[in-house]
Image 1 (spheres, one colour):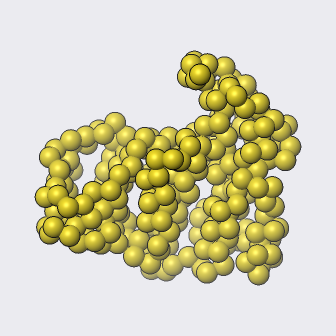
Image 2: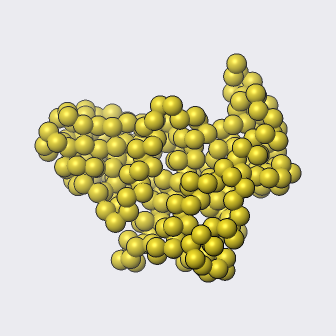
Length: 256
C-alpha cells in the first residue's frame, strides 16, 4: 500500500505574494515554506546554506529554519506558501525544484491566495500542489516531463474531484484504458489514480468535518463520495478513526 494511504494529510497555514520590496529580514515559520519565483531572482540565506533562486524555481525551506530574502532587482516577484505536512507526504528538506516545464504549481499557488477560499478548498489545493511538486521533482530526476495523458488526468481530477468521478471516466477523457492510466500513475507518481483522487477528496472532507452544520452524509456527497459508508471506511484507513471522532474534536465544537 502507498504511504499516502495511511499518512495524515497536510494542513494549510497561509500564502502570499511578495513584490516591489528589497527583501525580507530574518524570520522563521513553524511549518514548511515554499517560495516560487515568478520574475527576477532572489537569494535566501539560512544556517543550512545560501541559495540563489531564479524564475521558474521553487525553494523548499524546512520548518523552524530562520531565513531572510534578498531581492536582486525591483522587478523580483514570488509566491510563498506555508503549511504543515508529514515527511511521508512531502519531503521538507532544503532544496530547489525546477518547475519551468510545469505551469501547474504556479496556478495552484496563485489560487491559494484567494481569501474567499474555504478551508476545505485551500486544503484541496495544497494537496494538489504538493503532489504535483513531488511528481515534477521525480520527473526532473529522470530528465523527463510528465506524459501529456498523465498531465491531462491530473488536471481532470483536480477540477472535478468533488463530483462522483470514476477512474474509468478519467481514463476515457484522456484517451487511454484504465489499466494504462494506472501504469502511468505508478510509474511517474508512485501511487494509483484512486489514491491520488482520494487524497484530494479526504483533504476537503477533513476540513468540512470541523463545521457541525454539515452532516457526515452531506460531507461525503460534497467531497465526491456517493456512498457515506465507503467514505467512513476510507477515513478510518487514512486516519485510524471514524469521521465522527473528528466531528467531536474540540476545534469542531467551538465553531459557531
